[in-house]
Length: 366
Image (cartoon, rainbow, N blue to C red; front, top):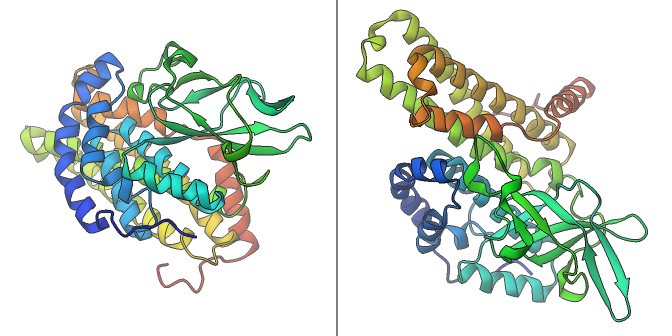
């Protein structure tokens, strides 16, 4: 039974509100970067605009969801990471949850609750049994919004070695250690560690069946969502570079113009890849071709991001490294967010798939 979307804002209305919020959220970035504070105010704005509820549901099309992720990424990449995790968690509950869990999700989205997905760990998180109950033992690292978001989906290892999703209370500050996130970029995600020991892992806390979290094609193909957020970050830096060139004599220099033209082309090309990946991955018959497309898109967006950061540093010069410069803040965030797991393996998998079969020969987009 899909989520009830009767009473939520239309995606078009939520997108219009989101576009209007982007400059306000961008203006608050220096404070978040300086203090490493969680973006409570920005999340409140997304909540009030219906963005958290609307894009946590099935109401938006793939293209509308892409636009939302992209816009939040332009506004602030830390906020974009939190928002993407929220969307990912809602999708997982909608796909694999019980009817009661889906009803709870609908109510929680309407109430503006924030969800996340935590998978990274230094040692396996285990589900342990004791008389009358099952609980978790261990903790997660790189846990976005640890102690600050409301609910997280975590993966845990069963006695037989299977991997099980568990819904947990993610807002207990005493379990979180934000000091374990000593980073130069993406500070506001507050991606510290979170102690899960003793939290329930039975009944309605259990989500789906063992192995559902990594079930294909949803697991690999779903990576298109973080590429959309990354794209927003790339576009933010491109815009800052453009603004600099327009406002300075450098804009009349053909060397700088040529450099800008090159990264403009790379960024626009990346946008086309992300759009194609979003639309293809959303198909009911998505399979290996869609996975290959998304894996290739990861590399395309990464290269566009690296290129636009280098171009900004070369054209703006020393001032692009001043810590209070918007370019420096945007580059530090993007440089970290681009470090998604196994990028070289993702490219190799995509290339291998394309060599095995010309995946897109009959695709009108290519």
